[in-house]
Structures are given as structure tokens and as C-alpha cells.
Length: 239
Image 1 (cartoon, one colour):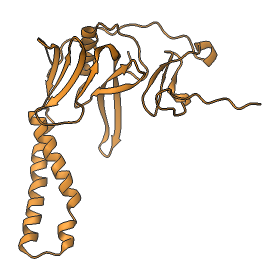
Image 2 (cartoon, rainbow, N blue to C red):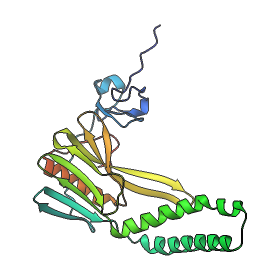
Image 3 (spheres, helix red, strand yellow):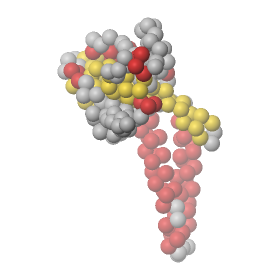
Image 4 (cartoon, rainbow, N blue to C red):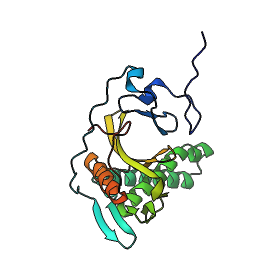
């Protein structure tokens, strides 16, 4: 008896797993690179039930924090990063940095051994990252612009990862995901907006501190500006 040939992702060539297949929706999502593919097999061949009829989401009203405007470059959606979590992070970061400043000023004045200087290096790195994040959260705004030729994402004025430009013709669909991470203080839920591109890749568009109704609103407004009809996607928020 011959061994079945494993299915491979056309994007990254990794083997596809059983959990990558959403037979009900006729989609395959590569768990390694996130590539999206249409499932060629009919639902009966996979033992799945017929896909339920698709119901578009109701229109989401403009949520708090988000702004939408028409500019000479196209439709622009934007929001500031300023959130209530900064009321905790600002004093925490000040206390963290003050402790490190006290530590090193004491070490410098007392002819301390090298281990005293080297020991808190990891804490210094955390302090720098926290300080930059707090300042960025106070100053930065994310802008998504849907223009005649491209979909553009920019964070600023402080530099931040995630700036990108996608050709309008390459955008196939937008969809939202819910992520849950478990930590010492219980689960933490976040929401992300993703792009499905025509080259079968799926890329994360934005994810910085948005709520469910905010990512859904962004999805609907961007799809409308691009002239895309909503359709179900593997791994998206339940309808």
C-alpha cells in the first residue's frame, strides 16, 4: 500500500496539517506562514457538513478613538495610541528607571566591583524598552490610508515597526482575529486586523491595543473603500 503524499504549502513548502484545513469554509491556512488557499476537495470528501449560508456582519458604528476622513490621498482612518493603561505604565516606568539611576549612581560613587555594574544590564534593556513604549504611546498615531493605488499603514511620529504599503490590486480580503494569551494574572485578549493578499499570503495589518468593535469597523471601512465584498475567512472572529 503506497504512502499518501503529504500536502505542501505553495508559499513556504512546509507540510500542511489536519488542523490547517477548514473544510466547512473551503479554506486551508498554513500554520507555519499563514498562507491562505482554497480547498479543492468537496466537503463530502472530507467528511465535513455543508457550509452554513454566509451572513454578512451588521454595520459597525464609528467606535471611540477612531477617526475617519477623506483627504487628497484617499480615505484615512486613524487613532492615537493614548489609552488608560498608561496611567499605570507611566508611574511604573518612572519607578523602574529611578531605581536603575540610583543603583548606578551608588555603584559609581562607591568603587563597586564589575558584577554590580553588569548584573542589572537586562533590567536596563527593559527600562529602555518601557520608556520608549510609553513615550510612543503618548505621541504616536496610526494612520491607514486607502488611496487610488495602494493601502498604506504608518505609525508616527516616533519610529515603530509595522509601516507598510500594499498595492491595491493585491488586496483580496480583510479579516479580524482574536488572540488569547495566558499569563500569571489570567488570560489577555487582543484583536488584530489581517490582510489576505492575492499571492496567497496573509499578513497582519495592525494589532496595537484595539478592541473588537474597532478592528471590525476598520475591516468594514477599508473593504468598502477598496470595493471588496465581505466573505468568510479561516480563523476570523465568529460571526
